[in-house]
Image (cartoon, rainbow, N blue to C red; front, top):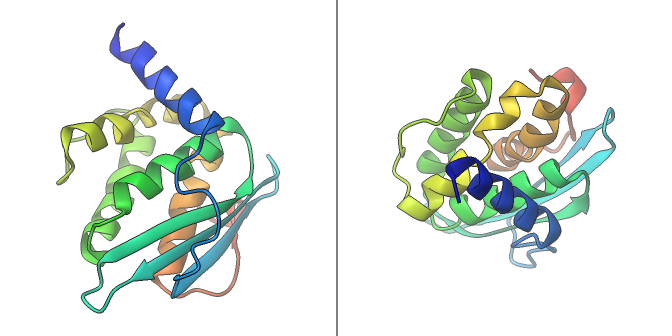
Length: 156
């Protein structure tokens, strides 16, 4: 199996069987996001502990396979990271999607890096970029305690 097939399989697996799906009852931060073009809706739940570490994270919602897979992968990667590390991952993710290439590990384990990088190719499909980035923009809103829902049509 080549890397492209591995990435494709990861996205399909996370799209069909999302991890950390459902409401996190211990959440102390949350945000909603909507992609009107594709119809994706997401609600990200986040529990930051006293040290600003992501103790728990989950999501609810519906959307295309790319949107669900990106949300699922995001929750797996961000769980256990500090708020600062989470924000660094957000910036790295947006850079990766924009440039369309894998990036350095940015403090990720090998497994996390593979999952993170599986979404790099989405940048080659402009109609799918907002699907892949919606959950990440929504995570940023949750970290910022932003209560206004994120609309993918008014973010870059």
